[in-house]
Length: 400
Image (cartoon, rainbow, N blue to C red):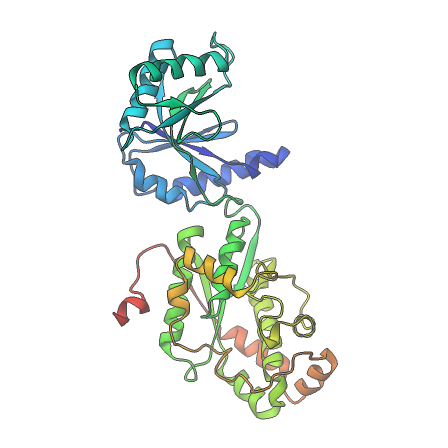
């Protein structure tokens, strides 16, 4: 069936009170951005709803793109009519007949936001339901668990009929909640953390610590590919690449093995904080999950956080590996994350890392290092690049 428009619903934005307009404008910009390739469409909004007028464009691909836009709770491809008894009945019957198979049961739901229409919502539902029953003998009404729900919305801007409610990503529109700097490794967890931060409306930048030649160029390409996956949900991601070889080498030479991971992560936090300040990011985000590995105990997190003042957000903190992996599969980062290219967090992993490090002890070991100079040098030599939504040759594709 040829649909006229896609109705966009958003739930959480309705709670934003006086800031609602700002959130809706941000969502509208994001919708227009993701639909740029479709020249015929027009996006408009009215109180509590947004519409994509298709003007002949295929609704399937547009719907798939909109499902990735945070801030949207559900979508419905709709036909738009001028309301009258005959047009309501005919449009609803055509919707039922356009389905791949005639459903066994149905229900009509009517919402009459425009009270100027002379019939009540209940009367409209009965009118449409009776017409369908007379013309489709094999169908029955089921008010509780119908196979198909015909939704009718009579609004001042038009009357919309649909028989499909497609779930979307929910959350808040990207750009509504400030900027966050994600510590992006090549593992499973950090891309999922980035996706979850995007869902809360942040603008995302990423920082990666690269220890060439201990880590290969393939490892860095893998991180770029992971950042590219996140662009499908949040648009362009600015990636900052920190040269970390010298710092890791000095830590390995001068600090006890069991504290190397703790001290390495303290350096990462110091550097990430400085890069975040230069970029205007208000918080850092990591893929840490409480108790998952030795460096993710409460004592470790406390000791690692001790060297910075910037807030650290940990959206995966209460999740287990299975839950994280399920999201990684959903957002299509899992296969990339398990590629065997080591990052700087894994190449020097000690046999028995300390699980309850003390800030004072870590600070004492760091006295063997010129911390300030090492951090400043790494920040100054950090390079930045824009990872856009444009297709790129993935390291996964190169393997097959």
